[in-house]
Length: 142
Image (cartoon, rainbow, N blue to C red):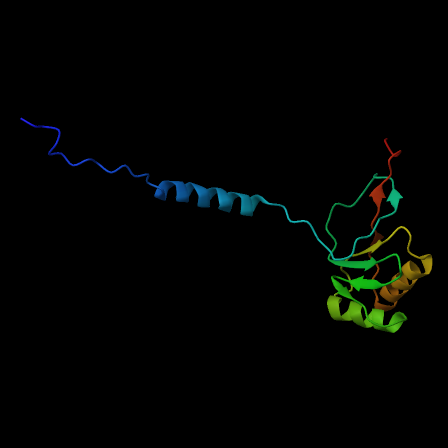
């Protein structure tokens, strides 16, 4: 009697369907729980200020000024010199909503006149909720 020679050997296989399900579940978990940071093409070094009594609500409109005095409304660069192209760019992005808060993110080395020009353009358009973005200073531990 030859019992062992007539049997077919079972093929060993790994069932990957359940592994794919677990992988997709983990992928969905990481995609849904990832926090998204506002990235910008422009790198600015913010000036420092104390961290006391900050408003934690995210601003609806962001204006950036680089160290050379170039303006960016949202993520679009303002082309042209003077206050009129700046006002047109702000009006195009903001529309008729002049009650939304505006954050000015100016480089610490930008000329003061550039920040004043941005604030003047916003004021002429009727924006009144302005804030200037800063980083906490190292010695401001209270």
